[in-house]
Length: 341
Image (cartoon, rainbow, N blue to C red; front, side, top):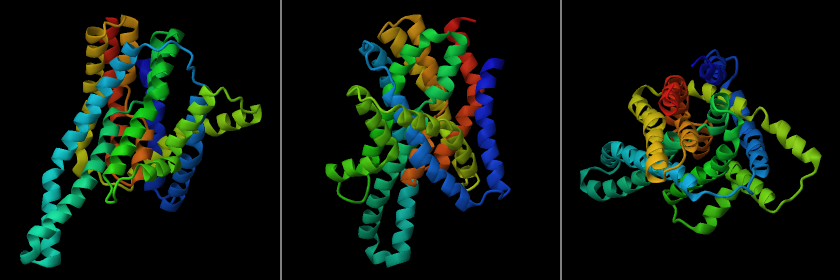
């Protein structure tokens, strides 16, 4: 328990420091936005590219391993999307009706309300995708891996990196597809591809994977530069996350925060345990690794995606912080259940 707190507490303190710096106005909003831009466009892409380019793709692929982890992830993603979409549906209808009344009067209310409802529905679908990302995206590298190394040992590394390799790519791409199809413009695959090429997170993952698969040898100076740039990535992202909380109001969103946190820390690992141990009959060792990875709190990169989409920033940022705090309790509980200690 103490060792797990030692791993998680520094992450909370870094985010808290960012919040204090913003609240006290020691850093202005413009300075925080500049730091956020540097983090999103430079350090995080460097970190993701480096990790993907050095991942071990030569290991034998166990489809049961991937299915036991990613099927529950997709189930929780879809469930979170549906629930958030349903919760905000009535609110959207009310907003659309009020706008129509204010703008055109009662005689044109029905047609205008329908148009407004359609626009709000698309925005609701996009926002629900970002909420779903926050409820299903795990902090596998910064929390999951250290906890497993502490409790089990280095033999977990192979299994962890098999999962981590596709984790961000799958969820970021899925969220990007939904948000693109939910835009007010007609969906075009060409525009979608171009927009994703411009997304530094997806681009860095894709290029890193290509460099790895094609066995391209980067010059040592480039490798060292990427490694150096990537080192402060998570620290900066956590700091920016904490600072950004001072700009958002989450008092009216607590139900969504609790729902996302409960899904992330309880429902997702429960489903992973069921699929791993019952459906695919994986070993106790593999089941433990997969459950702890899924039981890790929401990764900070989910907030960066929400920030880039300019939707659900407050909810996703709050989910990252809340799930990280509560994981101090839930991770030891999962470990005690899995290891019978």
